[in-house]
Image: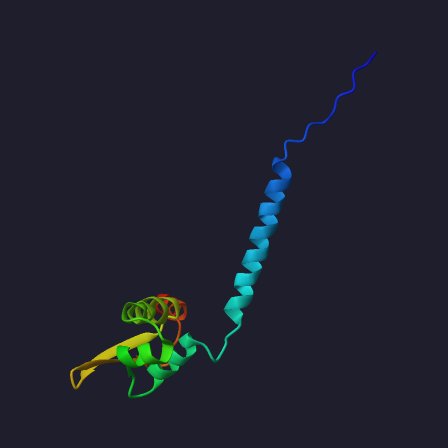
Length: 117
């Protein structure tokens, strides 16, 4: 009499597939969020203030956004300068530091490739 063998499933394959599916779904969401720009967010209001010729102080940005002082400074360094690649200038006016975005606001990746060629 011949033995029949059962194929054993370990359960690892479905989990791996589920993980890949979740990963693809998340990456799809991130890609769609990058292309969508909303005009009435705290970040957009702060950037609009920084684009004015008179600029904005940290206190003014705190009032508009509701962020704490360290959060505004992090936004200026991390988002405005690094992520968006905007040139940020600061100057002291009447004892208060004023920040503003200068130039056309081209991205860092575009300026880096232009300097290489």
